[in-house]
Structures are given as C-alpha cells and as structure tokens.
Image (cartoon, rainbow, N blue to C red; front, side, top):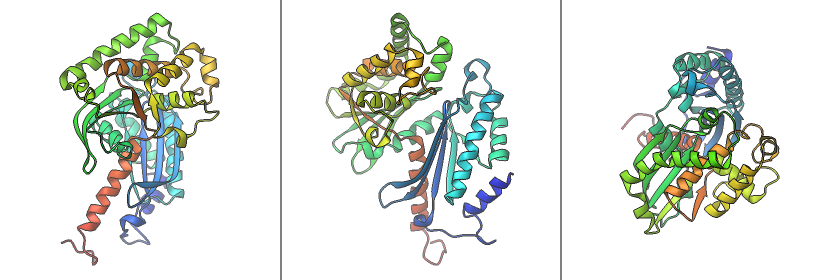
Length: 356
C-alpha cells in the first residue's frame, strides 16, 4: 500500500498512538466517494443531531466509463484520469483527518471486465478501498440522501437518477415519521455518456431527438405497467425528485445563473414547463455555445442534450406539474448510513466499552 494509504489507515481510527482508538459518533469525521461513469465526487462531513454538516467537497469529471459500452473495458486513459482525481480525494481526506469512510463505484465498474484490475490500482496508488455496488444499492443510497427534501404530506415518491452509464428509478412509499420505504427499484441500461457515444456526438436534429425520446419511453412504460404509478399520481400525493447533473444543470439554466450555485439549486421546485424551456435553450445551442455556458461547461456540453431526452421521456411517462431538484444523492446516502450505524453501535455499548 502507498504511504498515502498507510497514513489514511492510521487516521481512520484503527490505531491511535499505536493502540486501538475509540471514537464517539460525534468525534468522527466522515467521508464518502461516489465514482460514477462520468464524475468522481467526494463529500466530507460531521454529524449533526439531524443530518450532517459538510466540511469539504470535491468533484471532477473523469469519464471513467468512456467507451466501456463497446469494449466492456475501462481504458488506460480513463483509469489514469480517475486515479489522479482519487488521489486528490485521498489527500483531502487526510487533511480533514477523516476517521470513517466508504468509497463506492457504480455503473462503469459494474460493466467493465477489467474492474478488479482498476480497483487494485486504486488501492495501491491512491490508498483507497473502492467497492463496486449494485444498481439497487446505488438507487437506495441516492433516495436516502434526499429524504430531507420530502414533503410531510407526500405518500409516495418517484425518484430518478440520470447517470452516465445508467438511469435509476425508485418508486417508494413515504411516511413523515419513518421515512422512505422502497417498493421497486430498477436500473435502466442507458445514461448520458452511453447515449452520446452511441449517437456519435452531442448534437441531435429535432427528428433524432424525438426518436430517442420515444425509444426511452418504451423502457419507462414497463416500470409504469408493473407499478401503476400514474394511478397514485392522480391522487395528488406523489412527489417526484430528480438527482442528477441533468436536472441541476437545467435548474441553473432556468435561474439564469452566471455561475452554478448549489445553494440556489438544491431543493428547488422546478416546474416541467420551466425544465422544458431550459432544455429547449440548450438544444438550440451548438456544442461550443453549451461549453461556454457557466452551468454546463466543457465536461457536460456533449452530454446534456442526451440527459434532456431522458428527462423528457420521464415527463411523458409520468405527467407531473413539477419536480424537486436534488444536488445530493449517493454521497449523502453513504454518509447518513455510516452515521446511523455508528449511533446504533454507540447506543448498544455501555460507557465502560463492554457490550450489553
């Protein structure tokens, strides 16, 4: 293991001055890494009585899944980009004296035949233990990270996460006291990177865009037929939550932000009328114009129209007046689950450290 990894192991609290360390949940500093097809994201936080307080964050577009749909392998260049970003994450975790962490990889690693080789390199070069999680766990973590955005009177939630390599849908019951209870979770085999690569560019003619939306609707209808979501929507107690770069980008465009501002976007109620208007703005731009937009940038310029098509297919399948925008998801779900587990352990352990 690298020197970075050895230092991180000591900081994690396994040892302190050569002896086993004991931390209370309130003393821990937590970190979560979510490595997706397109992005590498880190969040460092401390626990609060309810929720968490972010102390550091990092995000970089790495495109780990570039080409993986065709080759079934992570390319050398993509692995190099990603490991460089993960080294930055590891250094930040050391600087913040992180004691509890979980680092996960999603769709790109699930698809790649050489995933184990990549995970081994991450452990050796960045000193991080990265685990590949199932699509179901990814979706559960994403919706768990959005719990605080749920309205008390909501009986059901339809949440979606438009990723780089896949799109997750979560249909769940909601209770203000007990939180979210998933009814069904599915991972659909399309995301913004895969669609853009299959299409060959980020530019779509009106006919190409419409044909894409209709193809995507076929996948979504299967989920609707199985669960009758529209029937619950007509009762007026279903909340839709979108957590992805697509919905946060459209929110920034709609708000006319000169620079992306998470505080203005996270938790925003975005009407589908406004979402469609922002999507149309982006579709009318060429690649260079989208790259120059402060809420898009070079990293998403060739991907965002594909994301708009996925969102349009969702809107047509489940007509809804508005959605709640979440600039949060898997990382927050990871952190909250770690904190909850530590509180449960602390509650089961008497002050003298002996188990009850």
